[in-house]
Image 1 (cartoon, rainbow, N blue to C red):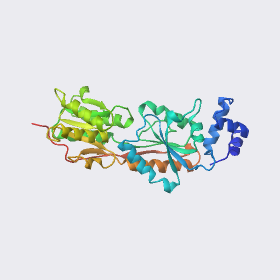
Image 2: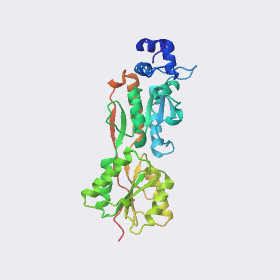
Image 3: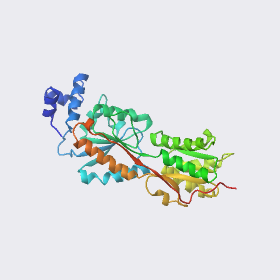
Image 4: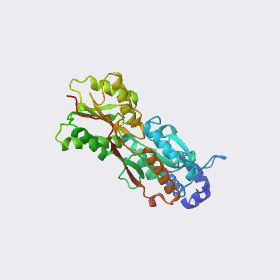
Amino acid sequence: MSSVRVIAREAGVSIATVSRVLNNHPRVSPGIRDKVLAAANEKRYVAQVSKRSTANVALLYTGELSLGSPFDAQLMWGMTSGLEEYNFDLMVLDAKRSMQPGETYSQMLMRKGVRGLVLRTTLATRNVCLAIADEGFPAVVIGDRFEHEGVRFVYSDSREPSREAVEHLIALGHTRIGICLNNVDDSDHADRLLGYRQAMEEHGLAWDRKLVIRTPANRPGGAQLIRRVAAMADRPTALFITDPATSAGAVKEARAMGLDIPGDLSVVGFDDGDSRFDVFPEMSAVCQDTAAMGREALAALNDVIEGGPINTVPVRKSLRAWLEIHKSTAGPPA
């Protein structure tokens, strides 16, 4: 970390000018503002407010908050396991709510005493990750990947095991296979859809858009899914459900409606932790170790923070998801 005096010397401006930039004063030209912020990010400046900790890192949501999801619960578990090791304190921020008018992301984060970010994003808000990277603020995106060389990320590759999941259903004799996706687009669910389509096309099976169903990524969304499937005139004999909470809600609702899994309907779900063992029957699932993603992201962020200029610290890490077969899949009903 560095002082206002060092930032002023690096940027070739006065201490008063640095103070105006960091406090988002309107009487600063864009060129001077960018120069000061670049120097502040380069020197890892963090504002000190009274005795407040300057070891803060933040989990920043660029779009919809999803703290209640199984993914985020496992992510937070993985991140918190590394806080003591790196001597960090963890904050949770909403990008839209935290920003003041006219503020850059760096200004907002410095104002809050944040040293680095783990970013949660959706397809609609990836531009925020790009803007933060362009500003040079230390950050690692979790659960997405970017071509932009300045964006550091850790994600889990679920496309191939998703293809394997659908191939497993095809091998059991299913030809009418549905897929359920989150109603908020992100790269993870896009990968799982690609895996589904690849398996169907490779086996010469028609890709029926009516069997691509979107619901909220929660247990009520899973219940809604089963009710919609049960009402179909030509309903699928198998489902690939790409979200853990939706998967659990679907299995519970199927039992409540008297649908036998896997006798009437085979289900391959998704699991960020161990929830596949918490439903009956135990669920076949594409699995990813989201806690490990959290640990990796925090370790990568520490490397970025401690490793000097951000552009010298490449972080582009892929973890492998996998398919597990349990008791929720069987051949199609006679």
